[in-house]
Length: 261
Ligand SMILES: Nc1ncnc2c1ncn2[C@@H]1O[C@H](COP(=O)(O)OP(=O)(O)OP(=O)(O)O)[C@@H](O)[C@H]1O
Ligand SMILES: [Mg+2]
Image 1 (cartoon, rainbow, N blue to C red):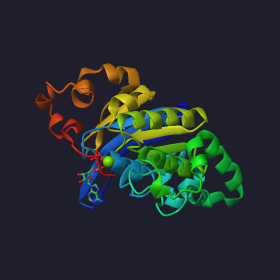
Image 2: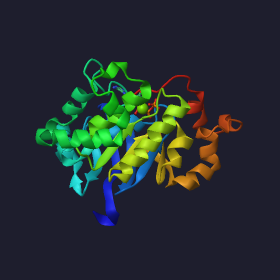
Image 3: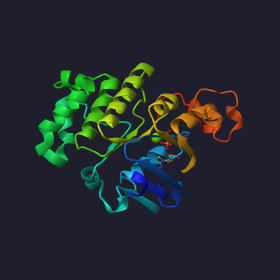
Image 4: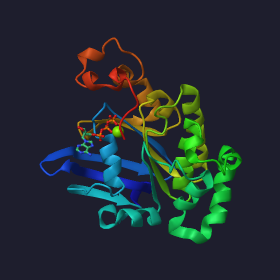
């Protein structure tokens, strides 16, 4: 793991339709113990990048290494066993199953560990312990997101990737989710997340990347991105000069509803 990178993505090209690449040679690193946020306009390829890393989409060219091992050589379910967790934006819990049953499914790669892992998650998220018998579909939005994270944590990931964990939540609940992600990181899990809630996400992050048209457009430590005027124009609510930037036309500021996964 040169430089302590848990994830190393280099010049990755990928997409959904063979002749139409969505990722156009994107590169990104995540170091052990970091929280890294991926920002970018709608359609920039953020979810596509996470899906390519998670093995849901094939990497057409370029390289992706997880803990020094070639990610493209693994099947998706093997990646979970290797320590790569992925929480999609939507449909990330089984609504009809109870909280406890959802957690149990998250532990299928290592059934023996279930009781111990479940207690670990209940300690981390006491709300889930209190609601353990409730159907996941009856949880509040914030609790459901917590359950989705908890379910991914059941497999004991080293790297957890989350696609818009605060989507659809009130600012207050989003803050709760972010503070819980800090707890998750402090428990030893490295985090890569896609977010629209740029300021709140960068506030808990070590570094960030801004993706545009399938490539990294800007990158830096979270504090410098929060101070960067271009980032401010695009994501932090400074709308006045938005129209003058090429990215602005597709910016999240123009978005009205929660994002696609
Ligand atoms: N299943 C799919 N089949 C074909 N094209 C897709 C599919 N999913 C996404 N795309 C296209 O890939 C491009 C990138 O989409 P992606 O979902 O990665 O964007 P994103 O950066 O996550 O945007 P958002 O902020 O809206 O979630 C878009 O042009 C989108 O239309
Ligand atoms: Mg997306």
